[in-house]
Image (cartoon, rainbow, N blue to C red; front, side, top):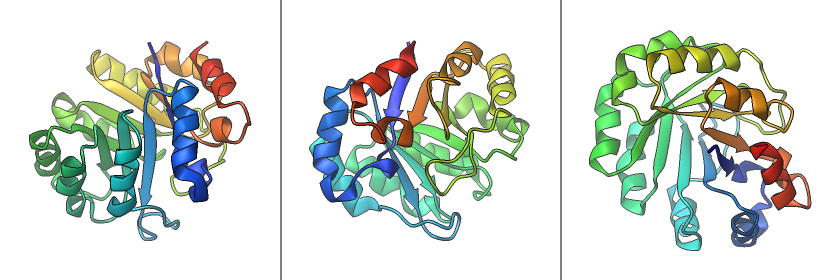
Length: 210
């Protein structure tokens, strides 16, 4: 069954604990956290101190997407905090295996994130060592962007190479494109404004499972 991972990027940051409780009660499977440094992407968001507090707030698995130029500086700390999923960008890391093994040694599910214009073939050599792949269906940095359909063929290519790996899609996900994403082989749907931009979180989450 597909897992729904609401993104806190669209949450009210003055009421994070309350927002997380609402998402728990609405049936979220995972909480998605975007870490941005203002360099790899133009936006700036939360860091390890806030993530550590979020960890204390919920028992749901946390999924940290590192959109930073120095992901190696975050990995051990995130493992120490108890994060379940961590992905970093193939476009920024020259020694991917080394960082993947740091995560695995810390008991973290290790993933690689790919921007829309990055071919999936670039990660085929490391695919057997990954727990999941995060495919961006918008250019990362800001919420509320329009979905890029090119992600469908990327899912298919990864599925042809590996039938077991989890595939996560983030960006512009809604009830219109979710069925096709699931059909192609996506396991985890990240949705920010689609869920948190509506008063009824439960209704929005359930609409993505259909």
